[in-house]
Length: 204
Image: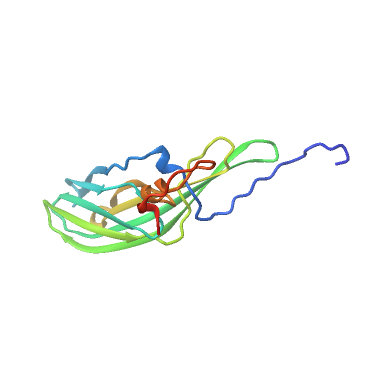
């Protein structure tokens, strides 16, 4: 103070439903497939395997859109599987510095949506479950931690098979991306300083 020195800088972020360049960087949407297999023990000495698969046709969604995914459970044990849980999580990572200029990071995770399905998956059998999540109409867009940024947001779809008779569970995770504009609507936008004829598809 008094010598015109910069003593500190402060950057703050307000979570809003903004815009994203995701589609310009990743124009193709590919189906995603995740598989997890776990050996489980029960009845003291018996063993078996549980194979959990998640498949989703696309990995990019807009707020308010429906997320449809298929879960396949291969129960290679002599026990019934009665409960399967599906959840959508958001992970927000923050980065900053201490007064001694030491870098610190923190991740806050919260559950946005949740479904619990009561099933009767028989021993040595394969079952498929089709689930639907309706995304909230207002969501922060997905972002990565880049140079100079202090915050990033990521989303994760999780399926959990509960095995109370084995005191364990099997979990599979699949990432999804939330963006604010679809490919069709974004293709109708003009870049700054450019003039293009308006097509019928872009007219109201």
